[in-house]
Image (cartoon, rainbow, N blue to C red; front, side, top):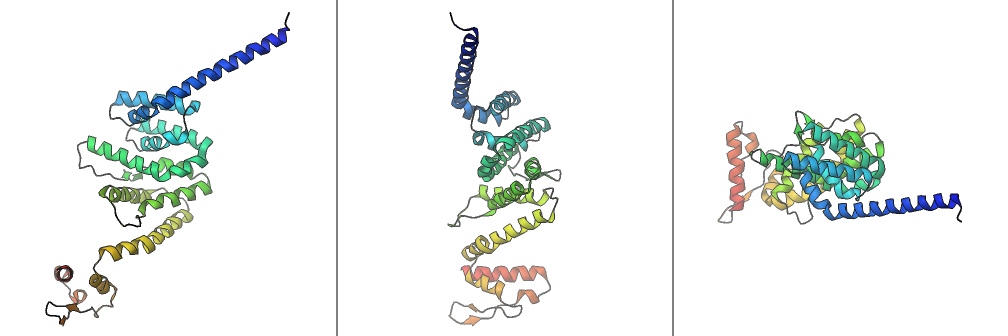
Length: 277
């Protein structure tokens, strides 16, 4: 006859194994349907979105899926004009940040772009032009995210440094209109973040200056005709000469000495067109 203690132990082990089996099955089911759930969480249909957010909340709190998989969607939902939905997303963000802060750092730009895409989707649904603004009522759409990471100096500085990379341009100097709109969206967020210290502001300014001094100059060299660059860089009153069709050099009127802005504009435009022709 077996010992009562051993019998209780066997029963506990059996329940533990059964629980692990159930969790494994739940995790497998969630992993299988996670992508449709994430898509539904960004749906324009309120009932569909609400059900998807409920499933997403359960998944995150139970740890049934990798946190990086759902993080971009959570950041996007934080920018929702629906305050209740935004608050729920913020609570989930806080839960992820408390457990997986180091993991989330690798998805800063991806998550910011997910919020931009979500706002573009909302703008199109409203029947507007599709223009995406980075602020609403003078408040940055990413203000909940910034408020969460600002609690500690290290994560706060990493956050700012990472998001400034949204203004980088690829070495091929090729870009799409969506990339330009995203950069403007991020610029509007940076402009109205609730900064608390000078260090935060100076870090953003320094990072932007670095971008301008490298990528910015590369863009100027690629986009601007050589003559226009020379004209912009020359001292006032000493504008370079333009080569005419017959090979002679003709002096270019100095637009800066003309008081009329319209004349200045026509002069500079004529100079540019002459160089391009």
